[in-house]
Image 1 (cartoon, each protein chain N blue to C red):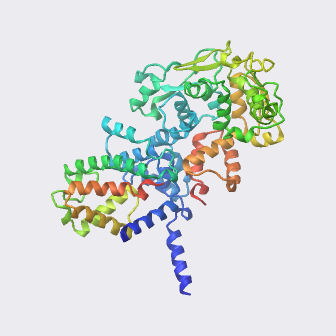
Image 2 (tube, chains in turn cyan, orange; image 1 turned 135 degrees about the vertical axis):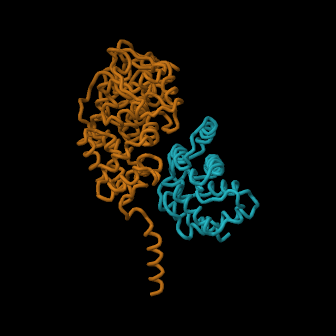
Image 3 (cartoon, each protein chain N blue to C red; image 1 turned 90 degrees about the horizontal axis):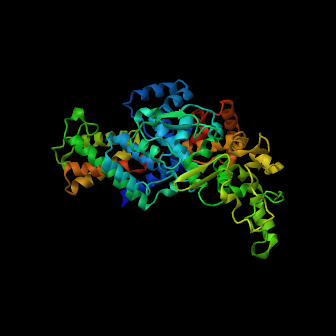
Length: 172
Length: 378
């Protein structure tokens, strides 16, 4: 509860700081750039099906439940593809997750590995480093996914989606 | 004492992270102009960063405006909201959007958006079906091909047929589909003012103007009450009907855009028995009655008050001060994500003047606005 409150507090501050949301087109092309996923017909169809629910103009008052659901849906598709692609190649050939040992259970990730991961995600999705408090909150969310018994790939998809749909990622 | 410390700490925490007090940074500038992020691994990152750090912000913005995203994301959305009746950005690519993107890309005089006799289409090497006034297939194919609009679009003259008097966006099929369809073509005038002068009709309707040009389809005694006509209907129709003859040669009946210099669209003389003594449109001669001191202050006209046809009408709008100011407002809204308010009147005036001094170069306007401290809340 305390964590949710903190997260909300940070979000409200971020909303005050950033005047606008990325609009539907920016969200899509930002995800393409950030995850380095090549669009295919399926992804495009999914985007076209969801874009009416994403912010059209990027006004703050377009931030609502339907928009968040659509954002989660399109972002999770990108994250799933990125995590799966990275899990199949050696670390030096990965776009992200360069320090992740995919054969290791998410529960067993060391603090150092988790810290590296959150900073890697922050640099990509927020275009800046995560602050200490942001990193702490994000890591505890990852621990939560890991504790649920999800596979490493699944936990990373959730984690990637969480950070890529957070306020710093969707605001300008 | 303790309270002051706490307050000071909170103030620092809240405001120290606000970008409004910082110099322009690479990432926010790139995101605002190109609509997408620039990864630090991209070689352009260090180049742009170095330009910004050495105080060459405009050069940095110029470099960013070469990015694919500037045309596909930012300019496209910027133009799209002007292209349709609902003013929504989610619309298929069409000749209206292609022309706006092309004019920005080529740093053309923005007034040609309302006066030019050209269109932008895919280069013929892409082997797409030719643009046609009866369908949008060419642009749909261009879009579905994922063609890079920055390189694929080429300027073609004339816009339609030889001898046709074009007026840039106003004679695109996209605009026709939005505003010449059904109705009386008055909507075309209303929206031309709304989109290109940022002047909704409620701002410029006025009493006391001559109603000589009000057409025959307007009831002078609605509900048997002539006062209502004078106090309501006439305030819009006097100015509107005087100008709408400019569009007399145009109609849109899905899916075809109809035009001819020797033809008056039947809609101009429909319902002529409502008030047979009203104005009968015989040609495309128009008159601008919105020339009262209040209107002159609002629009800053610099063209004759009368003209013939849509090209003269486009020139009336494009040469006005309101056009320059409207372009600044629209670019600011797109890039800075906020409306220019009364407090930024000086900014509006300065940037409109600069826009004109830059030969109405919209791309330069995007670049200048994106590096303006006002864009970041200062």
